Length: 379
Picture 1 (cartoon, rainbow, N blue to C red):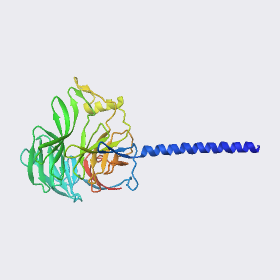
Picture 2 (picture 1 turned 90 degrees about the horizontal axis):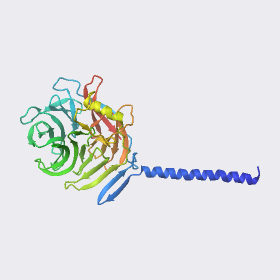
Picture 3 (picture 1 turned 90 degrees about the vertical axis):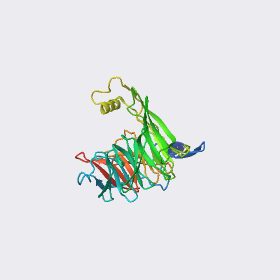
Picture 4 (picture 1 turned 180 degrees about the horizontal axis):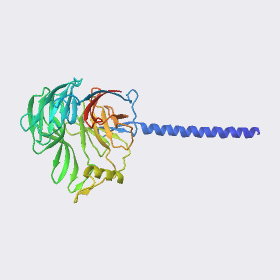
């Protein structure tokens, strides 16, 4: 090989290396752009745009370990065990409050799982309810319970003493929270020619101050198997964070109804296949299918998410609609208090509450009994 041929060969090799370096640079740059979180001001509103994959800022923890600490409700007698747990909340001392639908009571346990007391009972008198759906512990050291059938909020102190009932026969409350001022924020169903779900801000006497959000969930005879639903939480400064399941966007509004912040996540919607539709119809109506006269209205895709919970720090745990398979558990997207997408994690089951470094779930054991479980979380 001549010297000229050797030089030409070297030039060719260097050229290929140069092309490879350029391609690698553009690939790395593209990946960096894809993973970047962008925070912008739009019309006075802070908007956090999150990518499809987690992009935790430096110093923000992004991996999670869990350790089961407690399984609650299987032992004891009918008074002390959990017959059919539905909802869970926890106070600052670690005491666990659980709605037991079968007992029609809220049962309270200490951090070691020992039964303390039952609050309320079945009935229509003071301090009684017919079908408690949900509840919350309030900053005022009380307990606010949504009773579906009696259409009222029933208020107790944490020792179980009845304080008052706030009836409103025009409303059917679904979820409730109370802020530091004592204002009540709740979702409610409004049924007429069409069914709507509304998120309403009330004062402490249940006087409506503001309708934060409203979505149509049904219009007879059209039936949507995946209707939009509203989920919400309270931020540390008393604002309301809410989202509708059909869009991966969360709004933070103040008491005047003004949006002060938005959290947006880029995602690939899961396509609703014919197999998915058949499975859902069977789940809802059995082998017979939808009743005559009912029109099924299908969307192209599954909703963006199923529900979410917030911890006391303002971290957001969102359960997305995803066909991604995991060996065991439920996938959650996690956002920090600033709305940045920091992690995708697998929790043992649906999160019912996450507070003070603990996860609370309701899980079935091998005998089909529903237990409240507590896990220690470590980021």
